[in-house]
Image (tube, rainbow over all chains, first blue to last red; front, side, top):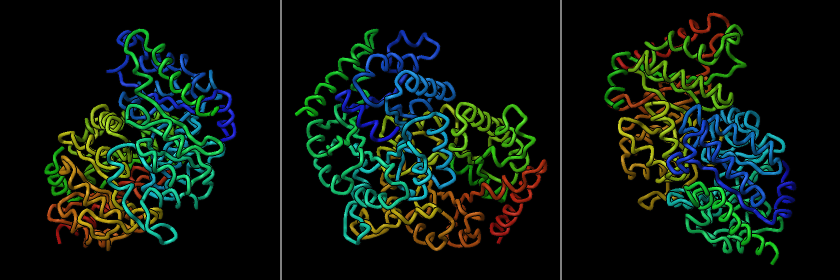
Length: 276
Length: 276
């Protein structure tokens, strides 16, 4: 999928919502546990109930790997279902991968070819040759961790470092700056946590045009309007993720309807922001 | 497995060799492609031929994920085969995972419970709460990236940062120092690339007692004797990984015998070092 197609979808749906499909068997409605593939059945219901309100789905691979082969099968069925029924949706494999070059190539093959996701999240610690193999795929997007929304973000990401022009700046800014020098860097997007809305101003100075995937709105305390105020660009440039707040809105038989209500609240807020 | 059991194994086998099972279907002998599960058949032959010469096997998850469900099945069969036939072997899931707390818990469940590996590799970028869920597993080990062996290691890992006591030092040293303050940090080991043997002196000042997993000997240019000179501690404290140099020594029907010859060369060198 091209970035323009993603932008068109945002404009037509009046939404830049990404729904995280982080499915925990301990949290889903009891009645689904009797089906052959409870994780897929759960996802299918969530997708059927919300696909017109969001522009992206983001399964987090950990929640599938935890169930071994069965989990990987659920992941495959989920991405196939989305690609078949809603090919306009921008799909994200939230995998946070990254390794030496030949290994990253294999991860890229796993998510871009075997599973046919539009994008994958990666970690920057191993540098250029751990990310460039992902960037080599045309029509695919690589979403690199910059500033995350968790407590541990302040352990290393905000350490003062020497930037590429010799001036002192936080590590996440050096990561952003450096990544722009990599081959096919136009295929990069970045993860930036919503819990630190004021940081977006600084981030937009470095990556004015890139899409940012923003976790942390809602459950983790981030404010949608604040993030938009500081982080939006001329193409919107934001994908706001919500996982637990939507998919676990209810654990009864009405879970999909309740998920829709939560997604609709966010979509409404987004529509207001977009039409201001 | 306890660290003491790993040390005992090193002493009895006179080896601290780890063999990386990074199986690429394009590189394995043609005749295996006719079997039902070529990746597992390849691994089985390598394991049968080398288990007395090494103390650890390290499948890299990327090489299995690239083949989807079939690949994940090969990974499961491989770890089950090692655990059943050679329970003394220290197994490493080379996965380089790391995410927010509840997600890292799911990855830990995937590798420590579902697949029953002794250890998993993780990336440090997201900090404390992305690693501690792994450390909570008793008898399991978490091997965190510190200084890797690839070119991109110099993009961020060697940037000057502020250390935990306020003094300036490279990021990988701050990562090492900081990780020692985390809960259950005694379950940490670290990845340190062999291509920079002189760095080991500095690293040993920070983590004198920890085991280091060392890629980069051989194919990537690192020297075994140099690494041992600067990196070994009173319990050896090193696991030297070789992947391609051993498993792809031949792509004929004699691949397992040739792999054994290469593993034996390294084990011989290690035995000499251990008995000096």
